[in-house]
Amino acid sequence: MLAQGSPIGGILFDLWNTIAWSEFQPNPMLLIAEALGIASRPDWKRTIERGMMTRRYRGIREALDALEISTGRSIGSAEARTALVRQWNEACAATRLYDDALPALSALRGHFRLGILSNTQSFDVDFLRSRGVEPLVDVVCLSCDEGRLKPDPTFFASAAGRMGLPASRIAMIGDSVEDDVRGALRSGLIAVHLDRKGGAAPVPGAAAIRLLTEISALFP
Image (spheres, rainbow, N blue to C red):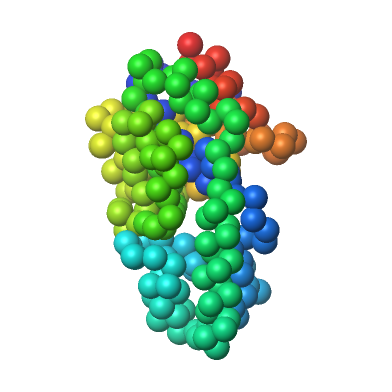
């Protein structure tokens, strides 16, 4: 159930596994964590995100250098580093947009202010423009520019400010229950869980959809 309140004026979208995904397996972030020897830690993903997604880097090589410093770990040999760079580049080349992404954005544009709110790196995201996503949104809020990650409430507040709307009039759409759904709810936004596979447990106070094209029916 969606909370009742002011009419929706804006919609924020998560990027990864909401609008875009990579066919490459396994996750290149996991490969980096394994190379650093932190993959067994329960917070390995957040450690990688903090290390390479909260400031701008010129590319994956510079980001790997920063991760070694932030974790106090060494990737090891030059061959291991070269393999990580190759795998990262292959994963980027395998980036795809979900079939419903551009149709949903096109249908919503003109009716709502649209934006992207993502935990992501500063490099290898040129596809947002080249594949037609960026021209359809009004605001792009990336963690690498903000210096903070979802579910930090200040990240959501910054996005709301850039949207020019109060948080209560903005819906957040994303696949992560903790970062996108609960994070949005705690920050005063309306939350919609994108559960593409179906079967996820309901989150109190949030709606659930399986396709981005269902958003129009939520906010007619």
